Image (cartoon, rainbow, N blue to C red; front, top):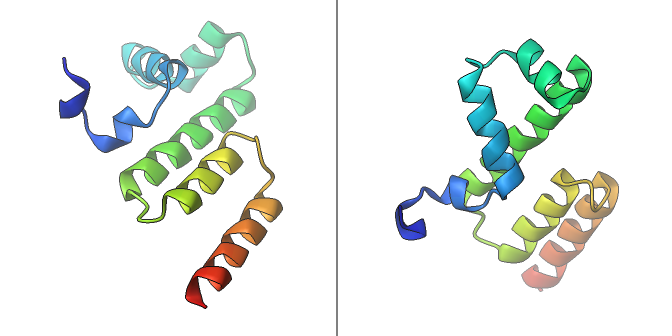
Amino acid sequence: MSIEILPEWISGLDDEDINFIKKFLLVSGSLKEMSKLYGVTYPTLRLKLDRLIQKIQLNDKCEAEPYIALIKRLAIDNKLDFITAKTLINEYKKEKSK
């Protein structure tokens, strides 16, 4: 399958995310089974799923501003805290509107 025919939301995911989705489908969406597979608690797995959902929503949204999309992605991946991300986005928007 060519990368060009993949939906935008999938092409923005890394291999780990794709493997998580595959495993999730194979266990019919059972978070209990997924937590066993990953050897983590249910709340930890739920947090991983929530972050993946946020990533998909962000990719699906096709943010018109690549800089804003990057900042949001860094925040979702815990590489940047949400307060700093919000500050950067607000400052960027202020500068752009000048």
